[in-house]
Length: 105
Image (cartoon, rainbow, N blue to C red):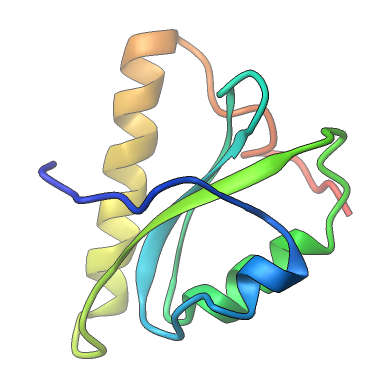
């Protein structure tokens, strides 16, 4: 898709304080194993990742990477990117990210 992902950063309150408030797509991975745990899209990356940071990931080191866009991007465009990312992952692995389809509060 030609997206330029940020470097992986720990999903911690201190790191999330610096996260942008722009729209974007993001992925959450296990920092130790690099296993893809979740893919998402949002109109406010900082707010959404902060919510994810409060969840029980059953991992010691969840990390995130993101791609941000201008505020003028449409919600459906973000949703299409998320679907394309998930479809690509499924095509390669024949599975979905571990936490994609479950409520893990």
